[in-house]
Length: 259
Image 1 (tube, rainbow, N blue to C red):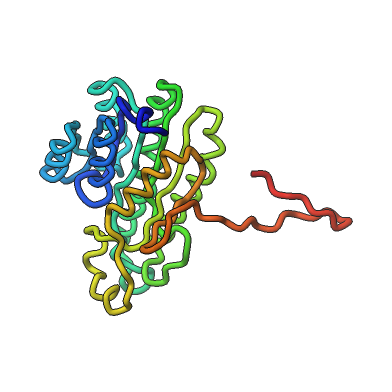
Image 2 (cartoon, helix red, strand yellow; image 1 turned 90 degrees about the vertical axis):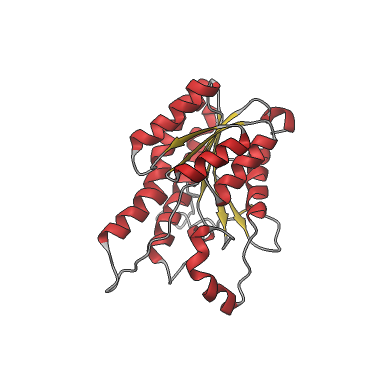
């Protein structure tokens, strides 16, 4: 997308009240995009929407009906939908040992993965009605690597990565791009409880603006099915996945797997 391409477009940003979502909402507004901010935090979300001259809707992404209502608000208020940034997310708060908590597990899975599924399902008709558009899901670096300290979080973020990589080619013919934003640890509310550990380990935090820059580069790049890593001191780009070995015939001939 060029600057001209952004002007007059309509975006939905879930988890848009603060952190990465708020940063993306502000960047899109600066580019001339009309933004619907969706979040469970009514006070902060309303404030963000006010700053960007957009609209706010309370939205719990674990409820598919509420994602549908957020898309409907974008269509009713601004005439359509061109960009869906599915950003809402939470930490798990439990492991799989004695600390396992079914309610905490289901909450994390329903927001971090189900929320992306519901958001895409809700957004697709509106994007198709515009002749195409862009979906960007916030995954995490935890969706690209193992995370022994947060295995459930890593699992749902890996699920987002797998969904994006599969949907990208599937929706290419509809002129809809689907990509994932995979930041490392950033200066957001989600890292508050582990900052002492990160500091002790010497792990630097990303500034939210670095993640927002990567989001914009994804939109401008025009690729699909890509998962962009964001790390301090590095230029963000699509992660290069290694292909798994393909099958061999009885005579030893190798066949590549389908893309």
